[in-house]
Image 1 (cartoon, one colour):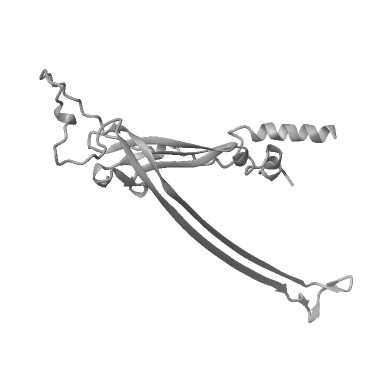
Image 2 (image 1 turned 180 degrees about the horizontal axis):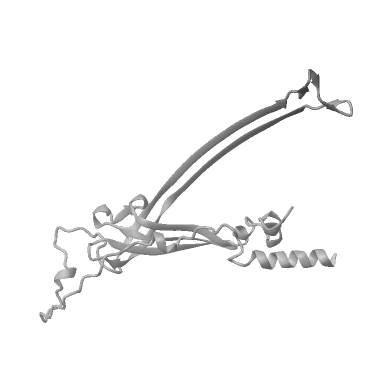
Length: 227
C-alpha cells in the first residue's frame, strides 16, 4: 500500500511539470501569431492657445463612432464554427514462399526419412477508421475600450465582462484589431471582423470546478499512467 501511494504521489508531481508532456498544448499568446503593428507616427504638438483641438473635433454631421484611445465600442458576438473530418484506411498483404523437394539422381533428397523441402506463408490485414465532429457557438454583446490607435488608422480594442451567478462567476474577455470602416453607425462591430481576435468565455466557482475532473482522475487518464 505504501509503494502504491508513493507511486501515485510521484506520478502527480511529474505530471505537474510543464516540460514532461510529449505534446505541448497551443497557447493563445504564441509569438508566432502575434500581430505586427506599424510604427506609431509622432503626434505633433499644436500650441494655439485654445481649448479647441483639431485632431479631436467632430463636425455637426459626423457620427459617434469610436476613433480615439479610451473610446468605447460594442462588439456583437456572432461566433459559429463547425468542423467535420473522416478518414478510413484499409491495407492487406499476403505472401507465399515454397521450395520443391531437392531431386538427386531421380530421388528426393531426405534426411532421416524426411524429404528436404521448405514452405512459408504470411498474411497481414489492417483497418483504421476515424471520425471527428466539432461545433461551437457564441452569441452576445460586450463593450470594450480602444486601447491604441495605430498609424494606419486601425484600432486595438480590449475589454472584459464579469457576471456573478449564485456561487460562481462567468466572464468574457476580448482583444483584437478592427478597422474604423467596419464600425457601423450604431458604434458596433461584428466579432467576425476582428483581426487577431482572442475571445475567452469561461467561469470560476463551484459550478465551473464541478465540470473538471480531479487531479487523481487526470493522472489515471493521462499519458503517464502505464495501464
